[in-house]
Amino acid sequence: MQSNIPAIISYQPIGIIHTSFSNIGGMPIQPVGADKIRGTVEIFQGYAKGLKDLDGFSHIILIYHFHQAQSAKLIVTPFLDTLPHGVFSTRAPSRPNPVGLSVVRLLKIEQNILHIENVDILNDTPLLDLKPYVPEFDQHQGERIGWLKEAKGRVRNKKSDDRFI
Amino acid sequence: MQSNIPAIISYQPIGIIHTSFSNIGGMPIQPVGADKIRGTVEIFQGYAKGLKDLDGFSHIILIYHFHQAQSAKLIVTPFLDTLPHGVFSTRAPSRPNPVGLSVVRLLKIEQNILHIENVDILNDTPLLDLKPYVPEFDQHQGERIGWLKEAKGRVRNKKSDDRFI
Image (cartoon, chains in turn yellow, green):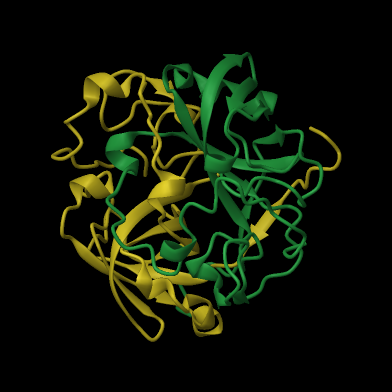
Protein backbone atom coordinates (compact mmCIF):
# COMPACT_ATOMS: atom_id res chain seq x y z
CA MET A 1 0.00 0.00 0.00
CA GLN A 2 1.36 3.40 -0.89
CA SER A 3 2.05 5.64 2.04
CA ASN A 4 -0.02 8.51 0.66
CA ILE A 5 -3.22 6.47 0.76
CA PRO A 6 -5.25 7.00 3.94
CA ALA A 7 -5.63 3.84 6.02
CA ILE A 8 -9.17 4.75 7.05
CA ILE A 9 -11.80 6.88 5.32
CA SER A 10 -14.69 7.95 7.53
CA TYR A 11 -18.08 9.27 6.54
CA GLN A 12 -21.10 10.54 8.45
CA PRO A 13 -24.52 9.43 7.18
CA ILE A 14 -26.45 12.29 5.55
CA GLY A 15 -29.80 10.57 5.96
CA ILE A 16 -31.72 7.37 6.36
CA ILE A 17 -33.69 5.25 3.91
CA HIS A 18 -37.13 4.11 5.07
CA THR A 19 -38.67 1.10 3.35
CA SER A 20 -41.06 -1.75 4.16
CA PHE A 21 -38.21 -4.30 4.15
CA SER A 22 -37.21 -4.97 7.74
CA ASN A 23 -35.47 -8.27 6.98
CA ILE A 24 -33.08 -9.10 4.19
CA GLY A 25 -34.90 -12.37 3.40
CA GLY A 26 -37.50 -11.99 0.65
CA MET A 27 -36.33 -8.61 -0.61
CA PRO A 28 -36.02 -7.79 -4.30
CA ILE A 29 -32.36 -7.99 -5.22
CA GLN A 30 -32.17 -5.03 -7.57
CA PRO A 31 -34.43 -2.06 -8.37
CA VAL A 32 -35.47 -3.87 -11.58
CA GLY A 33 -37.11 -6.48 -9.34
CA ALA A 34 -38.67 -3.81 -7.10
CA ASP A 35 -41.03 -2.33 -9.65
CA LYS A 36 -43.37 0.25 -8.06
CA ILE A 37 -42.24 -0.51 -4.49
CA ARG A 38 -42.13 2.80 -2.65
CA GLY A 39 -40.05 4.20 0.16
CA THR A 40 -38.71 7.48 1.48
CA VAL A 41 -35.31 9.00 2.05
CA GLU A 42 -35.01 11.29 5.06
CA ILE A 43 -32.17 13.75 4.57
CA PHE A 44 -30.94 15.05 7.91
CA GLN A 45 -31.80 18.73 8.40
CA GLY A 46 -28.23 19.95 8.21
CA TYR A 47 -27.95 18.72 4.62
CA ALA A 48 -31.41 19.59 3.27
CA LYS A 49 -30.17 22.76 1.56
CA GLY A 50 -28.14 20.53 -0.79
CA LEU A 51 -31.39 19.15 -2.29
CA LYS A 52 -32.07 22.37 -4.26
CA ASP A 53 -32.99 21.53 -7.90
CA LEU A 54 -32.87 17.76 -7.38
CA ASP A 55 -36.63 17.67 -8.03
CA GLY A 56 -35.95 18.24 -11.72
CA PHE A 57 -34.55 14.72 -12.09
CA SER A 58 -36.68 11.63 -12.66
CA HIS A 59 -34.09 9.21 -11.27
CA ILE A 60 -31.48 9.49 -8.54
CA ILE A 61 -28.47 7.41 -7.50
CA LEU A 62 -28.42 6.40 -3.82
CA ILE A 63 -25.08 5.41 -2.29
CA TYR A 64 -25.52 3.79 1.09
CA HIS A 65 -24.04 1.52 3.73
CA PHE A 66 -25.21 -2.12 3.77
CA HIS A 67 -25.72 -1.93 7.53
CA GLN A 68 -26.84 -5.55 7.92
CA ALA A 69 -24.07 -7.20 5.89
CA GLN A 70 -22.18 -8.85 8.70
CA SER A 71 -18.94 -10.18 7.32
CA ALA A 72 -16.92 -9.54 4.19
CA LYS A 73 -16.22 -12.49 1.95
CA LEU A 74 -13.93 -12.44 -1.10
CA ILE A 75 -15.65 -15.43 -2.70
CA VAL A 76 -19.45 -15.56 -2.66
CA THR A 77 -22.26 -17.53 -4.27
CA PRO A 78 -24.64 -14.74 -5.29
CA PHE A 79 -28.45 -14.92 -5.23
CA LEU A 80 -28.52 -15.31 -9.00
CA ASP A 81 -26.21 -18.29 -9.31
CA THR A 82 -25.25 -21.59 -7.77
CA LEU A 83 -21.52 -21.14 -8.43
CA PRO A 84 -18.98 -19.16 -6.40
CA HIS A 85 -17.57 -15.90 -7.83
CA GLY A 86 -15.19 -13.20 -6.65
CA VAL A 87 -17.22 -10.70 -4.64
CA PHE A 88 -16.16 -7.82 -6.94
CA SER A 89 -17.77 -9.61 -9.88
CA THR A 90 -21.08 -9.65 -7.96
CA ARG A 91 -23.40 -7.13 -6.34
CA ALA A 92 -23.55 -9.10 -3.08
CA PRO A 93 -23.59 -6.94 0.10
CA SER A 94 -20.88 -8.84 2.00
CA ARG A 95 -18.07 -6.75 0.49
CA PRO A 96 -14.85 -5.52 2.11
CA ASN A 97 -16.46 -2.04 2.13
CA PRO A 98 -20.20 -2.72 2.16
CA VAL A 99 -21.22 0.19 -0.08
CA GLY A 100 -24.56 -0.17 -1.84
CA LEU A 101 -25.71 1.54 -5.01
CA SER A 102 -29.29 1.82 -6.28
CA VAL A 103 -30.91 3.99 -8.92
CA VAL A 104 -34.50 4.76 -7.95
CA ARG A 105 -37.28 6.89 -9.39
CA LEU A 106 -37.78 10.19 -7.58
CA LEU A 107 -41.51 10.89 -7.22
CA LYS A 108 -41.43 14.12 -5.22
CA ILE A 109 -39.53 16.01 -2.54
CA GLU A 110 -41.27 17.45 0.54
CA GLN A 111 -38.79 19.53 2.53
CA ASN A 112 -36.14 16.98 3.57
CA ILE A 113 -38.14 13.88 2.59
CA LEU A 114 -37.68 12.25 -0.82
CA HIS A 115 -40.46 9.96 -2.00
CA ILE A 116 -38.94 7.23 -4.15
CA GLU A 117 -40.07 4.21 -6.19
CA ASN A 118 -38.44 0.94 -7.29
CA VAL A 119 -36.75 0.48 -3.94
CA ASP A 120 -34.64 -2.62 -3.21
CA ILE A 121 -33.18 -1.34 0.05
CA LEU A 122 -33.50 -2.48 3.65
CA ASN A 123 -35.31 -0.25 6.17
CA ASP A 124 -33.12 2.11 8.24
CA THR A 125 -30.23 1.97 5.78
CA PRO A 126 -27.76 4.84 6.36
CA LEU A 127 -27.39 7.08 3.30
CA LEU A 128 -23.90 8.28 2.37
CA ASP A 129 -24.58 10.27 -0.80
CA LEU A 130 -27.12 10.91 -3.49
CA LYS A 131 -26.52 12.07 -7.04
CA PRO A 132 -28.72 12.85 -10.03
CA TYR A 133 -28.95 10.02 -12.57
CA VAL A 134 -27.91 11.37 -15.98
CA PRO A 135 -28.28 8.97 -18.93
CA GLU A 136 -25.43 10.70 -20.78
CA PHE A 137 -23.07 9.93 -17.89
CA ASP A 138 -24.55 6.71 -16.58
CA GLN A 139 -25.61 4.61 -19.55
CA HIS A 140 -22.92 2.39 -21.00
CA GLN A 141 -22.96 -0.35 -23.55
CA GLY A 142 -22.03 -3.14 -21.13
CA GLU A 143 -21.90 -5.67 -23.94
CA ARG A 144 -20.26 -8.39 -21.82
CA ILE A 145 -21.77 -9.36 -18.46
CA GLY A 146 -19.71 -12.46 -17.61
CA TRP A 147 -21.36 -15.08 -15.42
CA LEU A 148 -24.53 -12.99 -15.26
CA LYS A 149 -25.29 -13.75 -18.90
CA GLU A 150 -26.70 -17.10 -17.85
CA ALA A 151 -28.62 -15.53 -14.98
CA LYS A 152 -30.15 -12.73 -17.06
CA GLY A 153 -33.90 -12.57 -16.76
CA ARG A 154 -33.92 -14.34 -13.40
CA VAL A 155 -33.48 -11.08 -11.51
CA ARG A 156 -37.02 -9.76 -11.94
CA ASN A 157 -38.51 -12.56 -9.87
CA LYS A 158 -35.61 -13.62 -7.70
CA LYS A 159 -35.74 -12.61 -4.03
CA SER A 160 -32.89 -12.48 -1.57
CA ASP A 161 -32.39 -14.90 1.29
CA ASP A 162 -30.28 -14.73 4.42
CA ARG A 163 -26.97 -15.90 2.98
CA PHE A 164 -25.23 -12.55 3.43
CA ILE A 165 -26.49 -11.83 6.93
CA MET B 1 -31.08 11.65 13.64
CA GLN B 2 -32.35 8.26 14.76
CA SER B 3 -30.32 6.62 17.45
CA ASN B 4 -29.87 3.36 15.54
CA ILE B 5 -27.93 5.08 12.77
CA PRO B 6 -24.16 4.97 13.24
CA ALA B 7 -22.57 8.40 13.66
CA ILE B 8 -19.49 7.39 11.70
CA ILE B 9 -18.99 4.77 9.00
CA SER B 10 -15.36 3.87 8.30
CA TYR B 11 -13.88 2.11 5.31
CA GLN B 12 -10.40 0.95 4.36
CA PRO B 13 -9.31 1.51 0.77
CA ILE B 14 -9.13 -1.74 -1.22
CA GLY B 15 -6.86 -0.28 -3.86
CA ILE B 16 -5.61 2.79 -5.66
CA ILE B 17 -6.45 4.25 -9.07
CA HIS B 18 -3.49 5.28 -11.22
CA THR B 19 -4.10 7.80 -14.01
CA SER B 20 -2.25 10.52 -15.85
CA PHE B 21 -4.25 13.26 -14.11
CA SER B 22 -2.16 14.63 -11.28
CA ASN B 23 -4.10 17.89 -10.99
CA ILE B 24 -7.84 18.42 -10.98
CA GLY B 25 -7.59 21.32 -13.43
CA GLY B 26 -8.03 20.24 -17.05
CA MET B 27 -9.47 16.81 -16.33
CA PRO B 28 -12.45 15.39 -18.18
CA ILE B 29 -15.48 15.74 -15.93
CA GLN B 30 -17.18 12.42 -16.70
CA PRO B 31 -16.12 9.17 -18.43
CA VAL B 32 -18.11 10.30 -21.48
CA GLY B 33 -15.56 13.10 -21.85
CA ALA B 34 -12.62 10.75 -21.23
CA ASP B 35 -12.99 8.66 -24.36
CA LYS B 36 -10.05 6.22 -24.73
CA ILE B 37 -8.08 7.68 -21.83
CA ARG B 38 -6.45 4.77 -20.03
CA GLY B 39 -5.45 4.07 -16.46
CA THR B 40 -4.99 1.20 -14.04
CA VAL B 41 -6.54 0.11 -10.79
CA GLU B 42 -4.21 -1.58 -8.33
CA ILE B 43 -6.15 -3.84 -5.98
CA PHE B 44 -4.23 -4.43 -2.76
CA GLN B 45 -3.02 -8.02 -2.49
CA GLY B 46 -5.30 -8.94 0.39
CA TYR B 47 -8.35 -8.33 -1.79
CA ALA B 48 -7.16 -9.73 -5.14
CA LYS B 49 -9.00 -13.04 -4.68
CA GLY B 50 -12.28 -11.10 -4.92
CA LEU B 51 -11.50 -10.27 -8.59
CA LYS B 52 -12.33 -13.82 -9.75
CA ASP B 53 -14.63 -13.74 -12.82
CA LEU B 54 -14.63 -9.94 -13.09
CA ASP B 55 -12.77 -10.29 -16.40
CA GLY B 56 -16.01 -11.44 -18.03
CA PHE B 57 -17.47 -7.94 -17.78
CA SER B 58 -16.83 -5.20 -20.33
CA HIS B 59 -17.61 -2.34 -17.91
CA ILE B 60 -17.11 -1.92 -14.18
CA ILE B 61 -18.37 0.57 -11.59
CA LEU B 62 -15.65 2.22 -9.50
CA ILE B 63 -16.66 3.73 -6.16
CA TYR B 64 -13.91 5.88 -4.73
CA HIS B 65 -13.00 8.70 -2.37
CA PHE B 66 -12.53 12.18 -3.89
CA HIS B 67 -9.30 12.62 -1.99
CA GLN B 68 -8.59 16.12 -3.26
CA ALA B 69 -12.04 17.60 -2.67
CA GLN B 70 -11.18 19.92 0.17
CA SER B 71 -14.40 21.23 1.65
CA ALA B 72 -18.03 20.22 1.44
CA LYS B 73 -20.46 22.78 0.11
CA LEU B 74 -24.24 22.40 0.03
CA ILE B 75 -24.67 24.89 -2.81
CA VAL B 76 -22.28 24.71 -5.77
CA THR B 77 -21.92 26.11 -9.26
CA PRO B 78 -20.99 22.99 -11.25
CA PHE B 79 -18.57 22.88 -14.17
CA LEU B 80 -21.48 22.58 -16.59
CA ASP B 81 -23.42 25.64 -15.52
CA THR B 82 -23.12 29.24 -14.42
CA LEU B 83 -25.92 28.99 -11.87
CA PRO B 84 -25.77 27.61 -8.31
CA HIS B 85 -27.47 24.29 -7.52
CA GLY B 86 -27.83 22.05 -4.47
CA VAL B 87 -24.78 19.78 -4.38
CA PHE B 88 -26.97 16.65 -4.44
CA SER B 89 -28.40 17.74 -7.80
CA THR B 90 -24.84 17.83 -9.19
CA ARG B 91 -21.91 15.43 -9.56
CA ALA B 92 -19.47 17.93 -8.05
CA PRO B 93 -16.80 16.39 -5.76
CA SER B 94 -17.20 18.82 -2.84
CA ARG B 95 -19.95 16.74 -1.21
CA PRO B 96 -20.60 16.10 2.51
CA ASN B 97 -19.28 12.57 1.87
CA PRO B 98 -16.95 12.90 -1.13
CA VAL B 99 -17.82 9.58 -2.76
CA GLY B 100 -17.12 9.34 -6.48
CA LEU B 101 -18.70 6.99 -8.98
CA SER B 102 -17.40 6.19 -12.48
CA VAL B 103 -18.23 3.48 -14.96
CA VAL B 104 -15.16 2.57 -17.02
CA ARG B 105 -14.34 -0.01 -19.66
CA LEU B 106 -12.34 -2.96 -18.35
CA LEU B 107 -9.67 -3.91 -20.88
CA LYS B 108 -7.91 -6.73 -19.03
CA ILE B 109 -6.85 -7.94 -15.61
CA GLU B 110 -3.27 -8.95 -14.81
CA GLN B 111 -3.10 -10.43 -11.32
CA ASN B 112 -4.17 -7.53 -9.09
CA ILE B 113 -3.95 -4.83 -11.78
CA LEU B 114 -7.01 -3.78 -13.78
CA HIS B 115 -6.39 -1.99 -17.06
CA ILE B 116 -9.22 0.44 -17.70
CA GLU B 117 -10.35 2.94 -20.33
CA ASN B 118 -12.51 6.08 -20.32
CA VAL B 119 -11.01 7.27 -17.06
CA ASP B 120 -12.05 10.61 -15.54
CA ILE B 121 -10.33 10.07 -12.20
CA LEU B 122 -7.44 11.79 -10.45
CA ASN B 123 -4.17 9.89 -9.92
CA ASP B 124 -3.73 8.14 -6.56
CA THR B 125 -7.46 8.08 -5.84
CA PRO B 126 -8.31 5.59 -3.07
CA LEU B 127 -10.72 2.90 -4.25
CA LEU B 128 -13.53 1.85 -1.91
CA ASP B 129 -15.39 -0.72 -3.99
CA LEU B 130 -15.83 -2.05 -7.49
CA LYS B 131 -18.84 -3.76 -8.97
CA PRO B 132 -19.71 -5.23 -12.37
CA TYR B 133 -21.77 -2.93 -14.59
CA VAL B 134 -24.94 -4.76 -15.61
CA PRO B 135 -27.20 -2.96 -18.11
CA GLU B 136 -30.27 -4.74 -16.75
CA PHE B 137 -29.58 -3.28 -13.29
CA ASP B 138 -27.92 -0.02 -14.22
CA GLN B 139 -29.72 1.43 -17.21
CA HIS B 140 -32.72 3.57 -16.40
CA GLN B 141 -34.92 5.80 -18.48
CA GLY B 142 -33.86 9.05 -16.78
CA GLU B 143 -36.33 11.04 -18.83
CA ARG B 144 -35.97 14.22 -16.78
CA ILE B 145 -32.50 15.65 -16.06
CA GLY B 146 -33.40 18.99 -14.49
CA TRP B 147 -30.90 21.82 -14.92
CA LEU B 148 -28.60 19.53 -16.92
CA LYS B 149 -31.02 19.57 -19.84
CA GLU B 150 -29.61 22.92 -20.88
CA ALA B 151 -26.05 21.73 -20.35
CA LYS B 152 -26.45 18.47 -22.29
CA GLY B 153 -23.84 18.04 -24.97
CA ARG B 154 -21.38 20.36 -23.28
CA VAL B 155 -19.90 17.56 -21.20
CA ARG B 156 -17.89 15.89 -23.95
CA ASN B 157 -15.61 18.85 -24.35
CA LYS B 158 -15.81 20.54 -20.99
CA LYS B 159 -12.83 20.18 -18.68
CA SER B 160 -12.70 20.75 -14.96
CA ASP B 161 -11.01 23.67 -13.26
CA ASP B 162 -9.92 24.22 -9.68
CA ARG B 163 -13.20 25.40 -8.22
CA PHE B 164 -13.67 22.34 -6.00
CA ILE B 165 -10.11 22.11 -4.69
